[in-house]
Image (cartoon, helix red, strand yellow):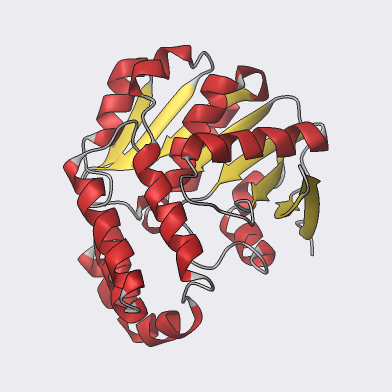
Length: 265
């Protein structure tokens, strides 16, 4: 594989954490994914293809959430796990791309460990709770508790993607409901609840590295104004897709290019 994809494990504080790395570049890029139904194991090749634009300049790292997700875990706790993983691997300073819940984690990483982050991209994320995210998370948790996994996946798709995108991939939805069920529903619930623990807004001025905020005005998960709130507070570069929502990072053909151009500045 030309992107040198490797899936490995890392021991952190008696925990074994899965992680993926790929690419040929000397510079590290940490990608922090959003709320994930099945985890990252086995997705190395797919991720390397999705983000192949970065593989010449960067070695890209993707870390799984800790295996023992307990009640009350916060996105700040998850940021501490990322920091510990970077320390263990000797990554002293990196570009960081955080998407959705990953963007919440990335904010705390840059706030609590500024030495580890030299550039920060915050995609379709928020810095404080709002009515949209509270309603969405409550509904997803309710569906999981009722065992309505198909309804969960359908609602996640409807909240994330444009009508055009959903129409295009509608024939594949039955496959998604078959293969994308949460392995452990309680783990998904605890990770979902953690989304509501993000409250970085009052601390954003502690972020000293260059920041690029990118989102969608039609975002039904974190709200269309969430990106604007962050960018205004930081007085940083921002781009909003007028007709896209929470899935802009997958739908927009120029998403990776915009991120790549910012990182190269």
